[in-house]
Amino acid sequence: MGICDGRVVIVTGAGRGLGRAHALAFAAEGARVVVNDLGVGLDGSGPSASPAQQVVDEIRRAGGEACAHGGDIATGEGAASLVAAALDTYGRLDTLVNNAGFLRDRMLVNLDEDDWDAVLRVHVKGHFLPLKHAAAHWRAASKAGRPVAARVVNTTSGAGLLGSVGQASYAAAKAAIVALTLVAAEELRRYGVQANAIAPAARTRMTEQTYASLQGVPEDVSPLVVWLGSTSSAGVSGRVFEAEAGRITVMEGWHPGPTTDKGTRWTPTEAGETALKLLSAARPPGEVYGAAGG
Ligand SMILES: NC(=O)c1ccc[n+]([C@@H]2O[C@H](COP(=O)([O-])OP(=O)(O)OC[C@H]3O[C@@H](n4cnc5c(N)ncnc54)[C@H](O)[C@@H]3O)[C@@H](O)[C@H]2O)c1
Image (tube, rainbow, N blue to C red; front, side):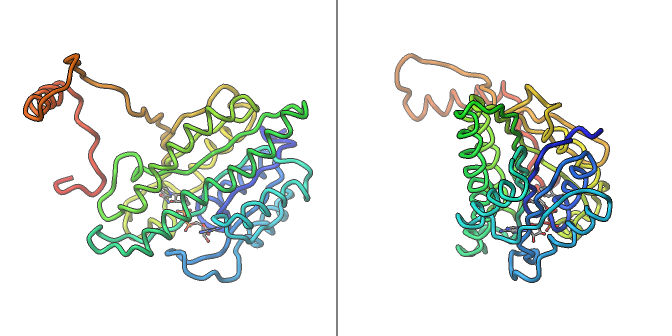
């Protein structure tokens, strides 16, 4: 018995790295998996032959069930056909793991508008569109009176939570994914859908050069993703977890800190004096990744 027996799971960007590990781990827990991957390069260039089919073959060799989808999840057609692939092949959809993405790192003064757009597109739109199509399916199922215990696992990053030098576009995109997750958790709760996000860290082609010291491998991150994508995680929604090697951390979000209400409008000088006073009583922010002296 696996904790995902009977469930149908989509994993985007599952041809390599973390997505591949998630797909294999879901299949090992009894899920039927739709393995999506466009097969692009580290910077989104390509696409070449999709590695999705190789992961499907691996799952089948291990006795599991899977099918491949080679579309671009950041297009309406790609996202719609991905959800349709789950429904047409297996007749249901229970879990969506949004994971696909790529980087085009530059210091922000050198960051081209096209590179900015490409990174925002693949991460933010590439999360939103599959989520929208899956959510429409779950809302319809719920309204038709069918039981829904659906799960969404989104992929943010430490860069999106704390900032990361040289990764302005990526950090902005990954921060947007956190906000998207919070809204999805709240809006979709009534239809039986839970949405959470993970900030993984593992050695993959994406990190092997910049973060050569990373200890963990993708397979270390997948168990938490599988649990979040199963019915065992009932009651957990709108949360963000960091996962690296053997460590799982609940990330705590923005909370109001020290505050003062004058009851009427401040002058700029007064506002500045007050801001400095409040800052002296506030917790300092976490250090930005790659910060000078860090
Ligand atoms: N590796 C880490 O330590 C780390 C840290 C923080 C966040 N992340 C995030 O985890 C996710 C997976 O990263 P990874 O390290 O496994 O990278 P990876 O490059 O090994 O895998 C990403 C996969 O996504 C696919 N892909 C890219 N654009 C796509 C598109 N439009 N449609 C479908 N597939 C597409 C690629 O072909 C690739 O196979 C990404 O969202 C990444 O930002 C990774």
